[in-house]
Structure formats: structure tokens, C-alpha cells
Length: 242
Image (cartoon, rainbow, N blue to C red; front, side, top):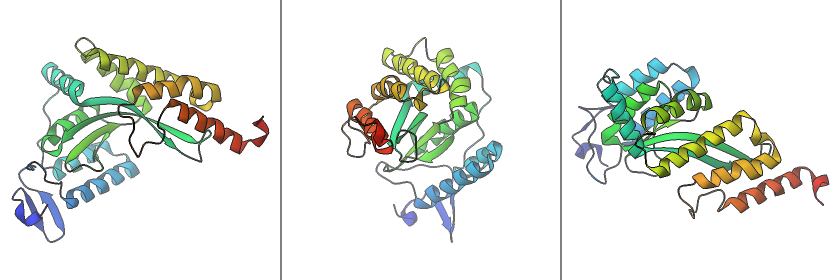
């Protein structure tokens, strides 16, 4: 997107700042300057852990108004939004430094076009944790994510149970129950035990996968993931191979 052709953004020298909020027409990309600044803000937050400053930095970057006071009606709005746009997932990636050659990454996420970034900012302020980022490979999609297991147990799961359980669709209710089982298994450190990883955690990972058959996925199916672990163990411990 040409910065000169977009009246919604202002660029003075190398200093980029949204002007009067953000509005992109269909097909337009988020300016690279905005993505770079968001990346720097996220890095600073990772380094210092100062959540109030992180909130202020995002407020300024996206030229947002302070979120409303959290009332019963606001909670209902957030619940409806999460029911429609939120997701509970667990990623699985190969990692040679891990005990069994893979890394499991539970995540709660909510996606939204950048024009609706105020919705994601409201959710971030409500949970008082997590972060905002640009979705890789997209033109203008933003993502709010939480990947902290303590936050899952103390904030995310209780919110789902209190505000979406009564009206959520059966499919998402089932995903919540699977996600809760995964969290319990992590508490039991089952991911550090071969049999429990293979036959308890990985089947749950497979049941939560939303899209299958993608070129960039680490494993095409459950059997491939299980076989990878077995092969990895044999490679590290040749004596175990029969």
C-alpha cells in the first residue's frame, strides 16, 4: 500500500503514527511502519513485563480511546465476540532440544481485521495479559493471544465457563473440554513422560487441529507425530532400539 495514497495515515520523515484511527479498504495492507513499531513494542514488553506501559503504547500506536469500564453488558459483549472470533488451540513443532523432539504450545487467540483493533484492545485490557500482533501472511489481520498456562487456568477457562458455556455452540464446548484436559495433563507433567505424551497428549492435540493438509504443518496426522517421537527417542538412545 502506498503511504501517499492512503489519507488515513500520516508519515513525517521516519516517524509513523496512525491518524484518526485506522481504516483500510478491502485488500489494503497494514503499513510496514505500523508492523515494525508493533514488533518493537512487543519486544519491549517481553523484556520488561510492564503491562500498563504496554497498554499505553498500544493505545498510542493505534490511536485508540481508553476502553470502557467493565460492566455486565461489556462482559456480555466480550463473551459474544470471543464465541465468534476466539479459538483454543495447541501448536506442535519439531524441536531438537526438547526431550522428545517436539514443542507443544497451547494458545488462546482472537482474530480481527485491523479496522476493528479496538475490540482486541478491549479484550487485552479485560484479561490484563496477552499481546497483540499482526497475523503473518495476512494483509490486515490482527491477533490477540495468550500463551501463559497460569493465565489459562485463572482467567481464560473461567471466563469461558462463566460467560459462554450457556450459549456456546456444542463444537466449541467440546474444544474447551479438550483444552482443559490438556492443561491438566501439563500440570501432571505428562508431556515429559513418553507413553503419556504419545497416547494421551498427542491424540488431544490431533482432535484440536482446525486445518489439516497444509504444506507448512509439522505433522500430517497423529500417527506421524507419534512415530516421530519414537524415532527421535531411538536416535537419542540407540540401546532402546530392538
